[in-house]
Image (cartoon, rainbow, N blue to C red; front, side):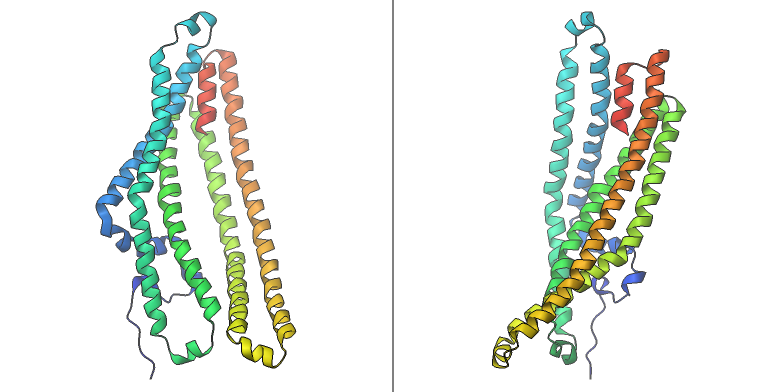
Length: 305
């Protein structure tokens, strides 16, 4: 009789098509919250780093305006230069402090989930282990452990900081400049996000195919090497090589499609940002000509987007 396996949030058997990234992140929260003070301090450093990052263009704008004429250049306040350097360093400082504080949290989560997967494999039926899919299973474990760290990194270090930065930038543009700048920024970000989500969802099946063919090729290689004596006894080296090459050809085709689709994704993202930057620079340049904006303002809105 087959043994039942204990339920665990990290080992949910939901089909891949029904799994959403936020549901996965939600399963990781209990592992991360074991170090809640580290998490809170890391998030505080994240916010501080973004505040420093947004403040750098503001100080740079004042420096540019201070250099507007040769007479003013001689009296450029040294405080602005010191503040600019301090903010640049603070942004890097808080970013690295966040990494230091969160390193233990991420690696402990990876370790605990990998241990649960290892125990789960030992509780599977004999039929599963008789299939001798050691190569594919080991590659899946390795890929899964690496993806946990990547998912935490993308969520906490990329998505969340970007949302904070977007809010700060839009607030500054709304308070200091014409509303058209906010509309251009929102339109650019909306196009960027919608395009990224649509193309990324389309690429999921391609990436899954890459992973499946990679695991199949690794399974074939490990199985052949484990049974080395049998292969040599029947002189099947060339046969095994052809089978392995067929798996690798499937992987090559899938990996090529994945790389090409990623290039199209990057091109679309850069196009949306380039259009937004062009529109903002055109509007800012018009403001400089009209006298409603300074050269520093032009540099500022360009740096923000």
